Picture 1 (cartoon, rainbow, N blue to C red):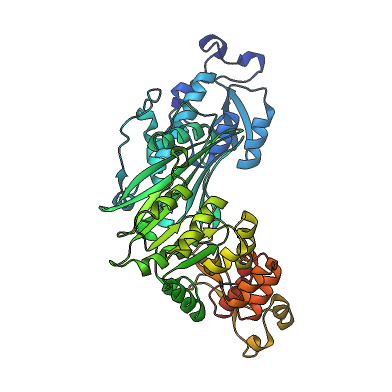
Picture 2: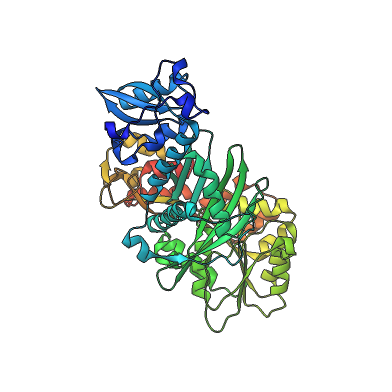
Length: 528
C-alpha cells in the first residue's frame, strides 16, 4: 500500500468505537481514506472478508496487513495466513468505517456479474410488478442484486436447467441449478446478501415481503427475446438461516413433443400409439416426480389434438401451453380440485380428458366412470412400476372389476442422462460382470462397445440431455383375470414380463448397448 493512502491515527481519539491501539501495541489506521483500487486483487478473498469482517489492505515486506476492529481475534490472522500463504499482521480500524469498506467490496463483486451483450439480447426484461409491498423500497443499492438475479436466471435458461435453488446456510449462501436431473452449484454469493436476494425474488413474484415465517408460492414471467415468455414457479421456505427459494422453470417453447425422441423402442412406440387411437378407456403414466410423465402425456395429446376432438386437461400447474386444448389450472384453496374439474369436463361434451394426477378415490372413481362411458382418459400416478399402479388403485378403493374394464395401458418411466457424443469414451467391463448386471449372453455375443462419461466443455460431467426408459403394460385378458383374482404386484409383474413386457431395467440396458447412456447411469436411475 502506498504511503499517500496510509494515514495512521490514534484510533481511541479519532474513532471512539474502535479498539484502542495503545492497549494492544498495534498501529491504528483510518480505513475511510483507503482507495480500494490500491488493494492488490490477489489478496481479496471475499469469503474470508465477509466471514471475519476484516480486510487485507496491503502486502509490506512479504507480510500481509489486515485491517480489523477486533485485533484480539487471532483466528483472523491464522485463517488469512493459511489461505493466502503470507505471514499476517493487524492494524486497528473503526468498526463502522470497516463495515462500509466491506459493503463496497462485496457490491463491486456483484457489479462484475453485469449482463453481457449476449445476455441483454436474450433477456429482454422481466414484466413490471404492478404493486410492490409498501415496506420495500427498491433503491440504487439494490441495482447489483437486480443485475445478479437477471444474470442467474438467464444463465439457467441457457444451460437448460429445470430448477434453481437459492439456499442460505450459517456460513455460506449457495445457488444451484438442476440440469438433466442433477443439482450443480453455480454460485456462492456472500451470506449477507441472502435476505436481499430472497426479497428481490419475492417482489418479482408478488409475494408478501413481510411474511418470513410461512411458505409462499408465486410466479414470475420472464420475456426472452421478442416473443417468448417463460414462467418461473416460485416457492419460498423458512429455514434455520433464512428463506430458501426454489424456482421451477416452465418453458413451453423448450418442450419437444416428438414421440420419436422420447426413448421408446419401436414396439413400445407402436403400443402407445395404438392405445391413443382407442375411442375410450384409460392410459396411466407412472413414475416419481421429475421422470418426464408430463412430456409423455403431452406428446400423446399433441398427436390427438385435431379439429374434430374436444380435449380438456386439469393440471397443477399448467406446464406446457398447447393451442386447441382447454387447459384448467387447479386451485384447491378456491375449491377447484382435480375431482371437481373432471366432473365439470363431463358436462362439456368431451372426447378426451387429461387429469394431472389421480390422488384420491373421488378422482379415481370419476376417471373410471369417464373411461367407461365413451371417453379417453389420460392421467398419472406416483408408483415405482406399471404393476404397482394396479395395486395402488385397488388400495385407493377402486373395485377390481372397474380397473379391469377401464384401464387400457399403464406406462412406467424414468429419465436417464445421455452421454455427450463429443467426449464419451469406451469402457471395458468383464463379461461376467455384465451378465450379473442383467445382460444376456446373446446380447454380448457380438462384443458390443460400451461407453462411459468423460466430460468436456460441451457437456455437464460427461452427459448432455436425457432420454426416457419405459415399461408398457397393456391390459390383456390374462392380466385382467389376475386382478380379479387378487394377484399381488409382484405376481402381476412376473406375468407381464413372461408375456413380453420390457422392464425399465431392460429398457435401460438396451440403451447402454446402443451407446446412448452408461451402465453406471442406468444403475443410478433404476436403483440397481
